[in-house]
Length: 236
Image 1 (tube, rainbow, N blue to C red):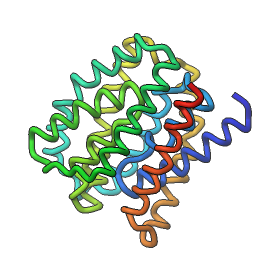
Image 2: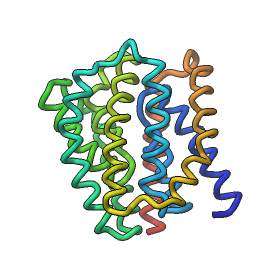
Image 3: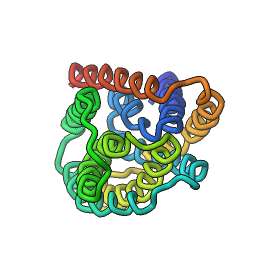
Image 4: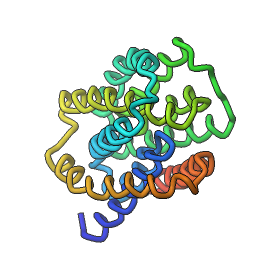
């Protein structure tokens, strides 16, 4: 990876971390399409590691508003979903994963635009956890299913609950990726090198949150993610 490519990914991670710190999800949606174009071998491992890191920061900040019961039911679905996602990583080629990533992004964007808003009841949360486990492990994009379930919650509750869920779910995803040999030392090294960019995005989100509407941020993330997904399809 060249210095320019690393710089591009670092800037992307800063913006993506700022987005997730503001609305509770979005790092994978924003960053994964760019990484897929620059260096698809980093997927999904690097984004899962970085997503876990920013989720930890947000969960600490919003700890008073976390719905631990809801996050727990989501994990019930996440476990089998993680196993399916890991199997996809082990069997699909890199290009196939890139195209699966694009399809996942576009599906999440389409559902969000359609305005489907299920009630965050036990069955819906478990189902969303299952879908999130598959997508999060196979493509590093596990946010959209959970965001659809909790999008009617207050900002702090949505950010905190999703972050608590992402921390636990991402740990299982990392274990699954290790188990199938899909997490290389190089991926971990680059993810660690990107942590300063991630922390910068988290800090910046605290400065701009009072002036930026969460709905506008979410709309921008969906638009950029859709554009990135289209680029991945063209490149593939």
